[in-house]
Length: 148
Image (cartoon, rainbow, N blue to C red; front, side, top):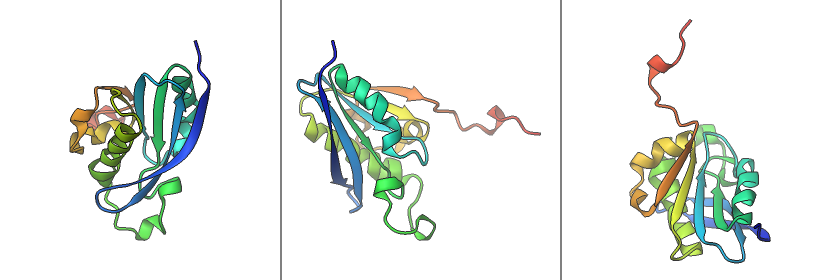
């Protein structure tokens, strides 16, 4: 059975002071919280269809842009001092905290696309996530790539 849903823009701040843009897609009676962590360079809107699908089935879903990407971009990315692991050290940590506040008492499932799965290892609050689902999260091992 599908439920009616709504999507609302949201903002939250990381522990190092960066404000991130996101969207909460929810239904009237959520039974599960889902965090969607994007692949490199993917804006949060790329994941809106799956967020909508999950919300219609009883989830509250947070999609968000990492620092330097889409709605969370502040200035010229090439001139920024952003370090790639900051997405896991700060952005993903803040996203978990924000979703926990938006969905108190609900278990969190993490849908991690590509680098969204790689950076779980640097998250200080990864234990707050109940389960992970990975999409195209490779090993990063150079031998897994064909060299010509």
